Image (cartoon, each protein chain N blue to C red):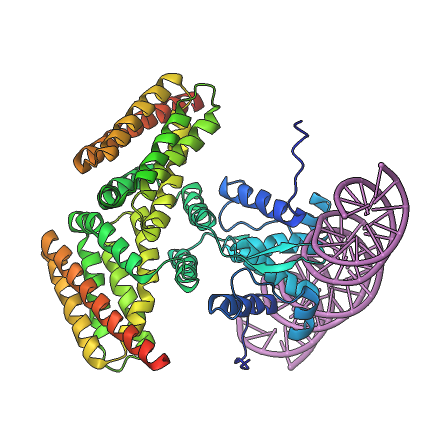
Length: 244
Length: 244
DNA sequence: TTTATGCTATTTGTCTGACAAATAGAAGTC
DNA sequence: GACTTCTATTTGTCAGACAAATAGCATAAA
């Protein structure tokens, strides 16, 4: 008995779906203004509150942004790489936070996938991208950086490395791994000595990239991961001892 | 609860942030019920509509789900792997739809990252997981499948392959690539002959996995990608000719 | 006793109408 | 011309209401 597939999801969710499809399929172009909330409401035959809930769902995915005023409205938002990275990191930190992924797994993933990524980077990196990696490295050397700023610089450095692969999809997925690793760096970075060591590793990575030496790159990154893992387990042991 | 400096973003967004933090940091445990919307409203000193907009933002990220009725409410949702993969692949398909990623790039990404993934799979796959891959393959052989069902089976097969890596993070990342590749399969699958060829490739992949032969696995997947790419460009050329 | 039925309270889903806040553009003023 | 003021438009928020789902309980029927 195949009754006309009764739809069980809320109206606002369905509207969000429809709008999303319209955006993804290009019926609303990037940057374009959607109809006003009032008009969407009458068009779909629902109240403005319902339309707004749908729009907020899309806003949470960085698909639309809204402005008030006469020239305002809800606009299709071409997500920038930064925003995408943000939503990715949201998902990644969520996974780590909920304990669905453990650190060992993430490090293993990084080890597993870096090989191909670095190969691409060595093959495709432009001079400019190599330059970007270096500036990120220089920024990280500033000893006045706060821990948080140091971690940000760390992320920027690693992003630069995967940017050099010149492949948007690779970049997209590697970003999420980098973000997932941030908690480790956070834990390790507290001591000045650790900073120096990390920077030393990064210098190794940079020069290997500059010389387009793939093997050196891989082994340098492996070494960095070994180091992080070791420091991390030490820090974790200390924390456990403290807790008990 | 600490008073924040004057923030320029909407109240509903701020509330969404606060709730999100509360969830991620574990103040609300997974599966737990949040306070009712009315109570959240009075607690934050806002109207229920505002609270609801915040909750819908979280719902869009699969962080909460809601049920009606006495035992209902808004619950913290431990996102399943499937849901997470969905949100990731949602972002990926979005990127494809907006033209930020092209097919060549995605195929290259798959080629680039598969190596490490398959290495893990060969090393870690359990007998059960190998079995899962086979059942997925058998399912795909059913000639009565609709095109859509065939594509679903295709996705299931490839997911099984990366599941065998036994690494949640790798899985998470590779799922998004698999999803991003669906448009290709869709385009290629229309002909029965293509189905047979695809299944032949898959049989190669399966037997290579079963024998834990990494090289064979890689070359089989490479061949499949070559085949898909070729068929895809043919289909695209035809489509272009049709359009003109 | 067991099963079926209906009632009730609770909670989310949606609607309505209103006002506040931001702001682009026009109109007025110096 | 530069500045201020007004106005219209649009999103942001509010308050109160009703609809819809549903778990639990009480009641009736087998």
